[in-house]
Length: 160
Image 1: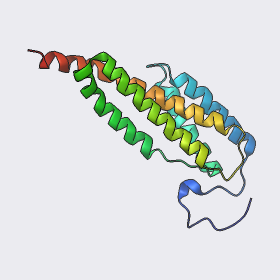
Image 2 (image 1 turned 180 degrees about the vertical axis):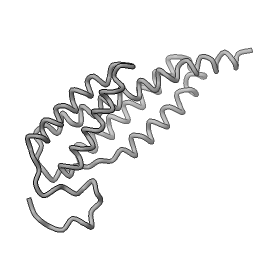
Image 3 (image 1 turned 120 degrees about the horizontal axis):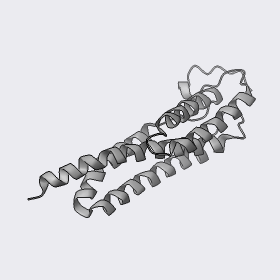
Image 4 (image 1 turned 90 degrees about the vertical axis):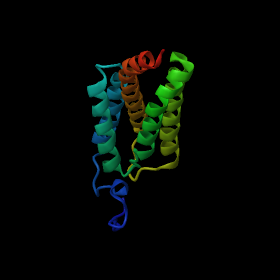
């Protein structure tokens, strides 16, 4: 690892001088496991949040890219578009919009995985990205399920 001055780089690109690679690999695998558990509706909320925290820690420690703004932006677009699709196309429209949002989220994570390169070697990096992708999918699914009763009451109030 080079010891160049990293003060001109953003925080998420800075890698510490010494990285415990075993801990990095273990955290990546734990992120995958918690991401798998995070897909389960309702009970997966805690594990999904742990997976996101582990992803952040590994990204900061390894110097990997940590950018969640685009994913959160698509979450908001998806959550705002689901009611419109529900009111026009029904339940199938809401499912279609949720599927489209999850697909865009997966493509964003895939582009981060393919284009960025961590400063430190991590053979479990693919598990890290799978875990965070599953955690985001579980959280978006939970928010979408919480939005469904609101949509049904909105539909009843708009019906003549």
